[in-house]
Image (cartoon, rainbow, N blue to C red; front, side, top):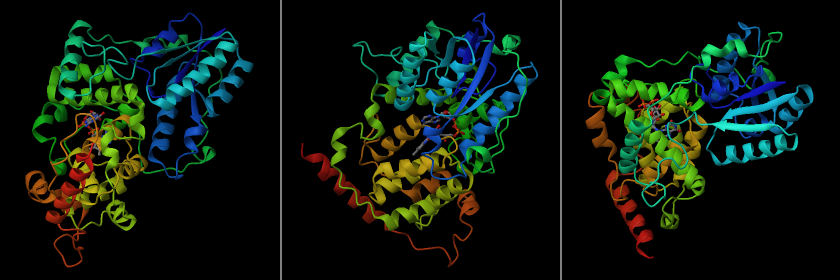
Length: 432
Ligand code: FAD
């Protein structure tokens, strides 16, 4: 009999809760990863940074497991197809995994659980992706928090009551199922191309985190950790990040709490995937001009900080947080384009794309989310540039033609756009 451990958003060996439990199960552990065709088929492009990132990360895992005379069983198909096959090949005592809180993932796991139950196989999920999940942090009336500050206070109190525990899965690898090592299928074979992404083992950089609060807002300094993708796919442990943050920088800790805040919003209010958290914002009559949207996507709005951000995104799959806020606000307020269009574009391009963070932040920018900035606060791109890119280092890096005749005229005048946005929002929100 074997135990199967199903890797998903936890592509690491160390401090992996579910993996640790599997390795302690008393049965040899077959680690499995599934390239899920239901997800892959939805991707628009065969050049996809994230698929390549995952592919490199699972290749690394496989290499490590082969040192123990084992293998990462990498499958391609729907989870149900893959489990049917596994059940026919092995005698499985239990399938263990880590919890995933996105609506589609919950649905997928319910289906798999049902199937395994019909075969008398246990299926269990552990908390690994977050420090606090589901119903652990609730208000005194047992409802979820929808405002960040009180949520984060409660989060910190709870952490004092329940200190972090690390699960040393990396020390139990001798419990892996022994089999002939083999190479994973190539990217090509699963229908994707090699991209510019180079997977490296994520590290907690003391130099960056110690001074994060001083420099994090200046895009040209690029003084943030770039750990978003590692947290998204679990190539780094959130518990280790939090331990590090507690020692080094509470401001950085707050960012990790923002991540969990939006995750619990998505868990408790799954409707946000398609709808405004604040329902009345559905009444905004978005202008949704396709040509203007295209200019925003391409970084050709004539607003240098916006264009710089969009070009950074298009070229690298990353955009600095300050600039994400500026470009998102610009799309919703200046161009009156539905936040869902921008959200979908970011989802396609960001290496660190995460449904809960992306959705939460887009709704924040549009003003329709929980704990969002009030709608009358509209980012002024020029003021933002003066504050955060005074020397124009960031702008000039991404928009080299800025300041020459070749640079385009602004897509819209800031003052007019601001007034129009205020007017449209106000009218839409006024009538009950
Ligand atoms: P750091 O500044 O080093 O922060 C560390 C980690 O904290 C991040 O990696 C991330 O996991 C978390 N974090 C930081 N800020 C936030 C935040 N505001 N909300 C939630 N988590 C946060 N973040 C994503 O991880 N995925 C997304 O798809 C995403 N989309 C965004 C869209 C918009 C419009 C905006 C304004 C922000 C978005 N963010 C998203 C949040 C934030 O911009 C990124 O997490 C951050 O820029 C990633 O860079 P970093 O890894 O260097 O982060």
